Length: 116
Length: 121
Image 1: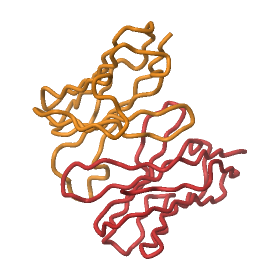
Image 2: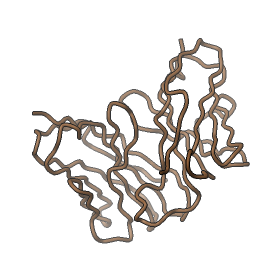
Image 3: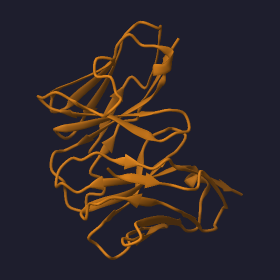
Image 4: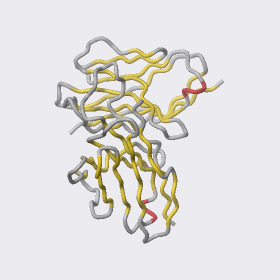
């Protein structure tokens, strides 16, 4: 079974600053995906970034980037130039790559508050 | 593209009644849909995997007779909470997958509905 751990229940960052959210996972699988999802107060699940385990290069999406350490089973999210709209719950998630649909296993989430 | 519609967005029902929640893939065929439950300030917990034309696969601890799942077509899955009780009050979210994992340029393999807030009084 896969587990995903987010050790920071809450984080706060000032606008324009950088913040890093931590995520560790445990799996015996070698082929999988990792994701960061954002859930704003509307509760819509929004994909922030995804990483394929076979790729060594860290994924980046504009202000969002990850630090993927496969051996350490670590997958942290860095948000640069934080904006008020980044305030949300952030979930780290894991999916086995089966080539088709597979369930997501979510971490417990980190509530990020961006302040002025 | 890749829109998933979930209905209703919120519902209040009396204890003992049943409530049906629909999850539709609007612009793609979803051979597999997933149903998650989220308690306040908690994470999403998978309840069951719904496959078109076959019985749903339930996660351990989820009562299949209480949470009835039907995936009768490639665009619609329904979750029925039977004989609802106040402890069933929660946020229910569905997600859908188009069947084959698309290339990495297609960012998300799973598309989420907007969720349904169920309150049982």
